[in-house]
Length: 176
Image (tube, rainbow, N blue to C red; front, side):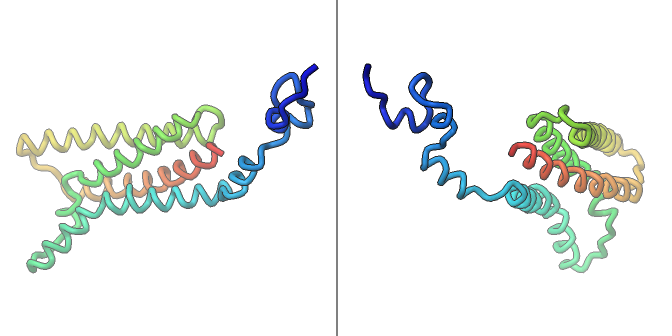
């Protein structure tokens, strides 16, 4: 009978190690696990990155347009900045990315995650269709109500911001 390799038995090779040895973790793996931040910390970091890159950078063109027009001394109405559906494009991107993240992590496993995934998907579809309609009307030189578009696209943006933020955190916590 040959002596078992101690390296194999310490990580639990089949047939030569006891159940206790199979459950032991190699010191390198254990040290790596201890260095990982807790799940909530990873979720907060992911949410901060999402906010910085997906939200702030997305609305930056609208903010820049406001400053450029104001610098030239022009009166800038909010409906001039968001009245052509610009926020709808941003909202579509936020909602679709959050929905995709949740569906990829198994959204159908609990009701809250499924609700968030379905809500984000519905918002993404609606804002896409509405922006397409606004664009078609603009091409026809139709009279569109920029005040209505800017107020409702802002409302949808805020709803999507909240739902997407919760979705990003939820998806990260489900991954753990």
